[in-house]
Length: 345
Ligand code: AP5
Ligand code: NA
Image (cartoon, rainbow, N blue to C red; front, side, top):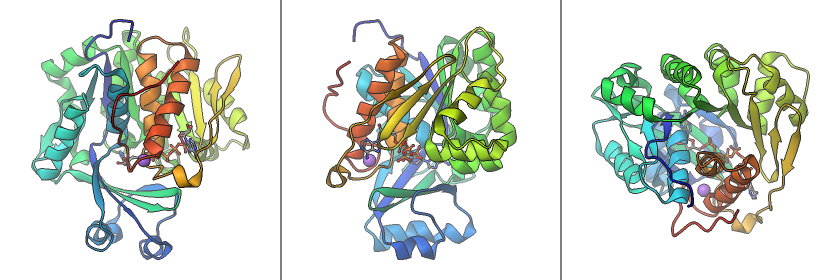
């Protein structure tokens, strides 16, 4: 990579989760009242699901957690360890150790908060064909507190960073931490990027989401998330481009830099929506037999995007890198990769 990349230039906050992933049948989804392509938080009735996956479906354990996935993919593409820093909360247990080891070996500089009050969070990934249903039991991840960010050593890391990425999923955990990072980015003219992450966040966490949005320079989402956002806002629009334009027009703190909206639509083109233009970037569709699982596709897209964006590459290159990265991850189980990346601008 040509341009010098500063260590710690990218900071992410999110829920570090260990994915418990298995291919299941319709009946299993019905048993737990899950939709084939959704992402939800586990309720009491879902708790036996994890044991079921392990005992009856021969599940795999894969490092997950949306932001951590994106940062791992970003690091893989950059091949320059410790460019990205991650904050999130894990328990004092074996799963936490696995996550720590996986993230570090992928080059992410993790600074976890650790709690004794709950075990490390897990996410059931229930695969049926090309769909995946996510059921997250946040556990320790839910114990993240802003105090972790306010210690002098963490504040130094934050001061040193230029780009901040937080998923919508983190809205259920620590809105004060999101505000802290968002306001810091605004005050110091740094870039703040966010993801809508799942439909339920726009529906049920509207208040902290709308409080964060004025600070968001780049907003990511997929089509279901964009639809849910539009519905929650009471917008009539159904067309992705029209929804994207309205997202662009929502209030923004830093008015000298207009917002950018990036919407993915599975195998359909990625939309780059800016103040005066809407561009479409084609996706070369993977055949069903090439798809192992789409778990991590959206996260990998963001990871690919970030790897170029922090090098100040054009938005076109960022998006092509995102599409390329998603493609690699879809061909494998979970958000995993191997070998040397061969993305060509
Ligand atoms: P999550 O972000 O939920 O979704 P994903 O599985 O990464 O992505 P999807 O398959 O939903 O893709 P997408 O719909 O976002 O994007 P699109 O289909 O447009 O991430 C999963 C992780 O979330 C898990 O590891 C889990 O731990 C974590 N998680 C769950 N709950 C959590 C919580 N509460 N807190 C924190 N973490 C949580 O696709 C994107 C791109 O992929 C496209 O633009 C395209 O380039 C490519 N692509 C997609 N389909 C095709 C195709 N058929 N052919 C070629 N390319 C394709
Ligand atoms: Na995958």
